[in-house]
Length: 268
Image (cartoon, rainbow, N blue to C red; front, side, top):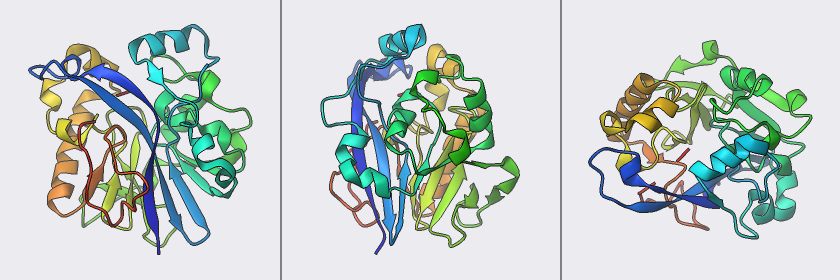
């Protein structure tokens, strides 16, 4: 039986009122989740959370940590949580290239790394404006990249979203979710659970894109596309798709393909 579980790989703290106009003055803990899908010999990791501290990322890394200070306790990184199991991960799918999503990549030197074509272009010329810290990208990554071109995405009749079937059997579809970062994607797992990455900072914040403050709006790759992505996700949810965001709190040691609980309330 296929399964899906969440692993929180560090956290950061940020004020919700600093993200949205009119939000309560709440400082919220945002986990950096990775999601492990297992089906037979196939083990697919969606994102990798934060890297263990300290980071060797120079002034750009210092600036990022000032804005969104990460907390990564001993044992919290994805490599430490999976231990010897890192060697059995066959694919790592990256939603985008921000530090809280690529930090654990070095733990998977043999896995195929799935990215979109815009992500591959960004990897070739990473910048702080794009939210990418070159020091977190492991050496020798290029030969293992599987870059999905934009033309491969097709409208899915059930969800209305643009998807591409990663394995050709319908179990794991990449989903085009533009706006937050160039080439940002999610994953539709077993047709009914959608890993939505940073399309919103949490389920309770989805649909409030018009209230995003100027600074986080300016940081987004395409604010208009982000708002349209939110509209499509809400439509998909009404059609029966369950949305799981990277910075919400999810049950641990629980199969998320079966379990319907989540502590919604979940930045970079």
